[in-house]
Image (cartoon, rainbow over all chains, first blue to last red; front, top):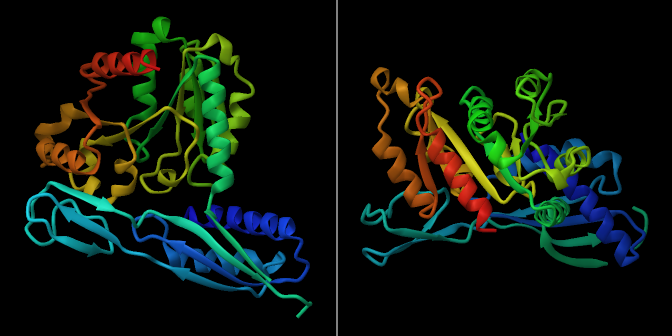
Length: 118
Length: 216
């Protein structure tokens, strides 16, 4: 359950960014991008956020998580297949000579802060 | 107000890991993160490496465990500097813990810093500690399907050590399958076959570590 410590770090990171921007209100919305191959489960992040956010200035914030897929590129048949989990061979031709593009990102994209106390 | 952050989650960990790496490099210390399941033989590998290469490599050990100091006591018995980190339930080490632990070591007198992570094939994958190389262990009794089932930790590793290789006759474990799976995830990674019973493979992995450290 490393999502718990990841969300802990995320909350600190958001607070730092909000302070740096000089925003005063509560955080209304967070947008994250968590790739399918990042090794981090988006549902577990949502669950950890529910547990940890209430005692912070992120209390009540909406959490939006984009989960980009990765692409398996096959050197044998040339297929480019979108994948939701890591594969060891090309889903199209089963050849093993593949490269995997993307899907590993774990990004804090945007933070919306309310202008006034809600 | 909308703040466009567009930054990595765990940025703080990554930055501290970079700082650890710079600090180790500046002191001439080669950092190795050792990961694998509970009971796969991480501490046993450390003991074997220290026994065989202790004089040449000037090692120290950081032991990461959820609780207790059983592993640290095993290392301490070998006369090597050791720091125990108790994570109090956390399932992995992070750069902050390693930073604090390294503070109590005389880095200038060391050549090799072996960091034994918490036994876990999942969570340590996401946390850079500031190491130069990561070795992942997979023991024969765990089964030959583990690379396919826990790809993230294998994908980011520089070497795979298949441990308890002397148990091969008792398990349906295909070394070929494991090697093939590892090749696909981490083509540049070295694969070693180890046995604590016979001592087989320890020389090879120790030589590799020495060469990697010397190349820096």
